[in-house]
Amino acid sequence: MNVRRLAGIAVALVLTAWICGTAAAQETAINEIGMVAANETLTISGTTNLAPGNHLLVEVTPVGFEPTNKSAPGGTGGTSGTAVVEEGNATANTWSFTVDTSGFEPGVYTVTVEWVEGDATASTTFTVVEAATATPTVTTPAATATTPPATAPGPTPTAAGPVLPAAALAAGLAGYLVRRR
Image (cartoon, rainbow, N blue to C red; front, side, top):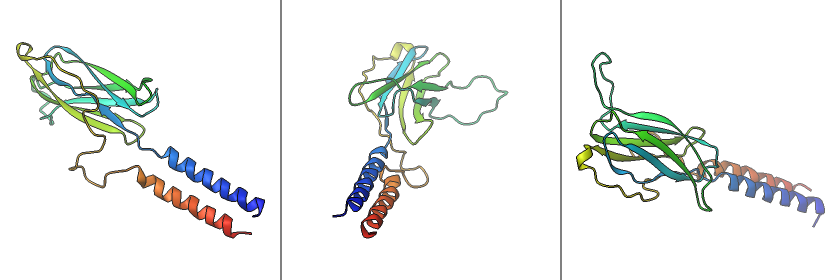
């Protein structure tokens, strides 16, 4: 076999492996929160396969949140901010976000975590209760999936989406190099 042809095949295979390896899906998960007493400080945390230093947008909103009359007093609380991905263990990196629930009315709240540079998202809910009715919460890892809810419009993105055209391009390049003499 010709050395030039062999080198072309090797380059095509390395290129294909590199493209497939870098197209891994980004994932983010939120640890279960449970019930929280009103006026308590809460740390929301989770895991991700994103590299340390990436920024995640964290939004906490009441489930019944909707536009209101701005001149009317009151309203339920909510908050948002960013969390920075920290170095974790061999399987996942970690992130955390501190929330002061002062001003939060009792009720159900949604937490949404979103990578600002990609498709990694996760969401969960927790309940704010009066201080006397709160029970201790138990944190368990990875309480939510990273895919958008079924009611979201449009197709759900997958890791195979961007890989297929790149792999087809690499296979075509390999075929061209093999056939070319």
